[in-house]
Length: 62
Image (cartoon, rainbow, N blue to C red; front, side):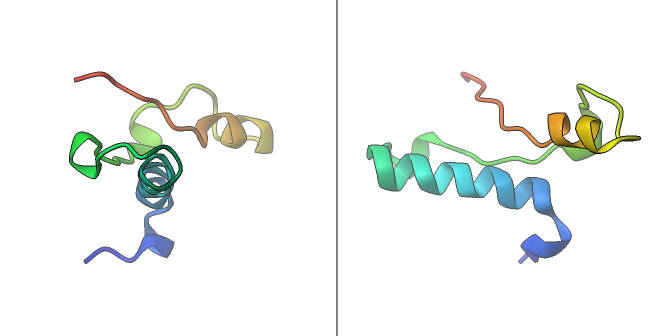
């Protein structure tokens, strides 16, 4: 099992899945939390503002 402290993007994705399941009653089998981290940045990680923009969750319809 992965330790979330070493994988914050994965932890963020899983936290969103848990929130959608517990708050909105979405079936867990319909959701998958994935972290892509530096594979798909929308901003430079050279500044705090850029890193903040890269800490995001995107929903992708499959």
